[in-house]
Length: 169
Ligand code: S3P
Image (cartoon, rainbow, N blue to C red; front, side, top):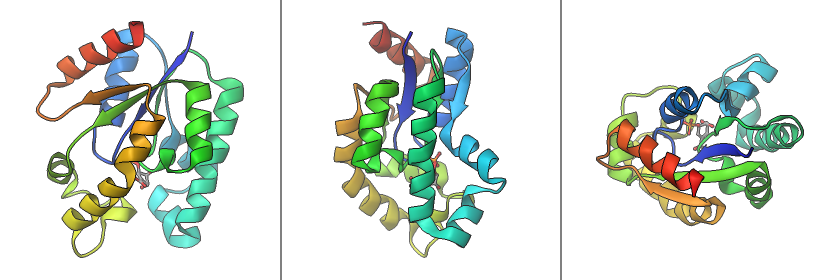
């Protein structure tokens, strides 16, 4: 059975929906950010601060390569920047069914505006940063996706239902 992989911008709900989906489908859950933090023994913020974003991106690729060898029949939630590398988009497709949780920049801003754990959004103007990153990334998320689900204004239950229908098709 194929893995189900959740991708999308920071704050789109990958982690929360991953947990709920894993209960609902009785499959265990992996989260690439958590696997990377565990392997490195430090937080994502510390990795960015000490070794920079490029180093973190290498860790994401490494994590996908490892999962490809070991991970079956799971729910996998991912870091928001993981699908940026073409190499990672190819690995994602090999790893399972890729579900893109699509949200508008406004929804994302409302959800992450008080968050201190995301290094990319700690600058002067997070709203502008979200807009810029979203403009660069949207097309890449769409390329990576097997299924696209618009999440704005929907309850978790409604989104879970849509994911369930899409992956059973
Ligand atoms: C990132 C998203 C984060 C985390 C890192 C970089 C990104 O994960 O991987 O801070 O580039 O969008 P979440 O999407 O879970 O916040």
